[in-house]
Amino acid sequence: MTHTPFPFAVVILLATAGFAFAAEPPPPGAAGCSGCHPASQGVDTQVTRLNGRNAPEIVSAMLEFRAGQRPGTVMGRIAKGFTDDEIKAIAAWYAAQKD
Amino acid sequence: MTRTRTRRDFLRHSAAASAAAMFPMPALAQGARGRVVVVGGGFAGATCARTLKRLEPGITVTLVEASRTFTACPFSNNVVAGLRELSAQQFGYEKVAAGGVEVTFASASGVDPQARAVTLENGTRLNYDRLVLAPGIDIRWDALPGYNEAAAERMPHAWKAGEQTLLLRRQLESMEDGGLVVIVAPANPYRCPPGPYERASLIAHYLKTRKPKSKLVVLDAKDAFSKQRLFQDAWKKLYPGLLEWVSLSSGGKVTSVDPATNTLVTDFEKHQAKVANVIPPQKAGRIAEVAGVTDRTGWCPIDPVTCESKLQPNIHVVGDAAIAGAMPKSAFAANSQAKVCAAAVAKLVTGGSPAEPRLINTCYSLVAPDYGISVAGVYRPKEGVWADVEGAGGVSPPDAPDSARALEATYANGWFKTITGEVFG
Image 1 (cartoon, rainbow over the protein chains, first blue to last red):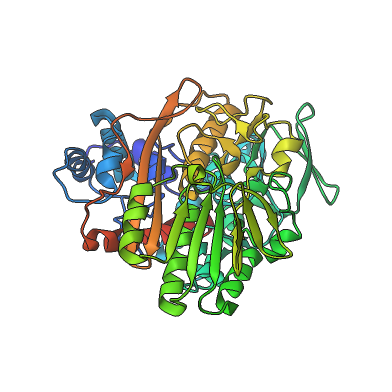
Image 2: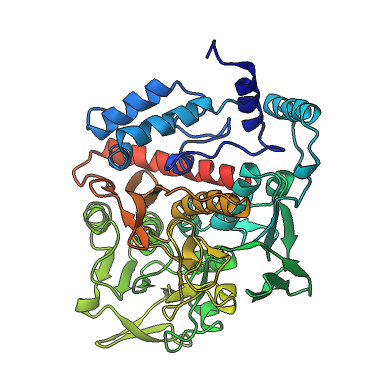
């Protein structure tokens, strides 16, 4: 992100401000994740927060879950419902959600 | 309800302040981008109202809810079984209001789809560009002979969490060891498909640990149910001889009840229970019928991209009241649908076109406090409803070790904290 032009950074800042300006709508499927993965900090759960995480990390975890190569409970079943492109879009959106 | 100012709040406020300084845009005044009324402040309605306000702060969002305190159904079976207090199920609307949603505590009594107005019991009239109905379920008091509102005081349904939940718990607590507990499970569709079986499991857990000479019978109007194999395998292991499930084809369908004698009548026999938990047939909450968005099934057909009613324009329905295709009537599904609905309404009100959504559901059930099982699904619009994305979803593996069951029980608890935090926190 070092070459990001300033106006874009402003847009990100506003999008994550939480109110006053429209937030960037999540791509298809992304909104469902926060049923288990807490969007806010400090929720007492063992389930990982996705906000602000590195996108390639989310992508590789999802691909491993989907391929049955990563131990888990529900994630293997859920990951099978998403294409590579959908997973990349979801990961990019979560990576952009900063606190 | 004091509020501590956190670093996050500080960052939010400073970002908002700098935004306001850079873009003093009067067009973003409240209401300038439309008016949306949401009726029903449960998992579906409260989620939808908050998400909509977050996506399009210029939209005026009014949430109409009769009760100042929300009592959550998920985990209320733990309350029935004495494993949890009802207060752990209860949430207020302070944070919903703090996020800019106008919360009105009143019952909605009328909807005029032509004039686009909702009438409240107190006489207030709310005009809308889009209306979202999230009324949950109502009990069909005409569906099971003998079971009416008075009967529910003797034979609790406990299918709307609150006083009914506590009544069922008190009945179990005051029953002498050796008593017969009967759960009556309804035909599909109804709120929380695995709910009756989780309840049976946790009541069995209570009986096993506290009143081991007692017996529990589930009289079912179905031959199959959600996560059936997982439940039945666990029952054999955890509650042998204590819990009996009677299917429809084995004569499990209850045709009438007699609250005076606590008797449940099937075509074949009469069961006289010490504690009778009757989970009766259900329909969409009353305001859906008033608005003309229910079909002859008593539920609400909707478009799977926008959640808009197929019967009335500009009215959307989410949560248990909706006919959701392959999606179950669960809190997770309600929350998932509500976010899709909010995104669609935000687009429609501002002149855009909604994107085709993907939805997720995950339902945990506890067979014992440390024994969790789950069902998950991914859904997409297909032929006018939400259909399963093929190859995805399914239930916990049948041969999983105890450690996996314990982990799913932990995740179940985490899920409740996360979702109630997202919706009410």
